[in-house]
Image (cartoon, rainbow, N blue to C red; front, top):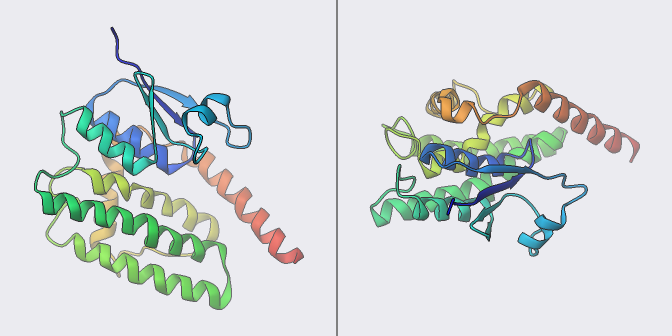
Length: 223
């Protein structure tokens, strides 16, 4: 009996991309199910009734939600190409920094892009402080896990979207002078064929973020 592997995602969200990258690295065939989050399908609501969002991985009829949890499930289910390190301490640290990326780095960068004036300055300062911690984690390494793309690289892969945000907003967050190791890592990660092949078209991302940026600016101007 053939294995059923489906990934419920949207075309632009970086979180389902984590799962797609992991499956690709392990050579797992899967079916993509595109969702419109403004009109969520009954299947998505059935498979993720708690959070009602993507990604959801459906494996032989059993749904798993939340991207970081899915990554661990994928790594434990398909043993080829390990994502998490074998050493227990190194595994714990990879999980720690992945959570740090979601809980600290991402919100501070998002706040910088959506704010202005002093609020933006404060958010940028916070984002820079967080990014500096990631910069230090890369010392002496090509990828966060060593010589190959692993769990933490995938978890922080959304940073490759920064170039689109920066182009749309003219705000510079990640510059090579302050973060040379992060910038070098980002290029290595983004240029890897298995990563590059999963990215949505850049022109479509730019168009989406321009529309979102203009809508936010219009809303702030009217209040």
